Length: 88
Image 1 (spheres, rainbow, N blue to C red):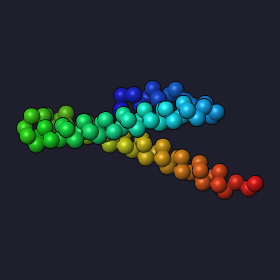
Image 2: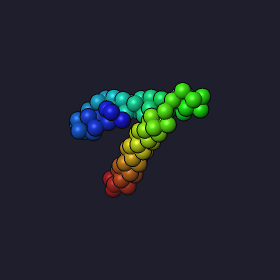
Image 3: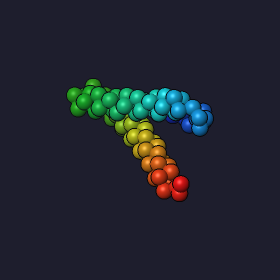
Image 4: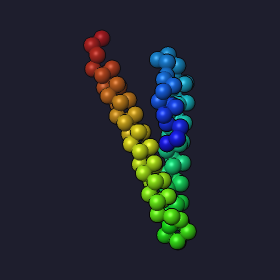
């Protein structure tokens, strides 16, 4: 989740669809990498090669990152629903 605070504070211009897509893609890739890393560390811990604290911290970072993505998804769905409910 190291890159998430920078992405949040950058902001996205309303008319820059490609920038929003790029930002979301970056956040999605970061979350995916954190989840993969947590899985690898869990397997290493099971084999006795990793520290429990490191495994727990990595799993928590992955969980926070996934929660952030779910919040973005929820906001996008709400925005879509509001647009669809607008009178013409």
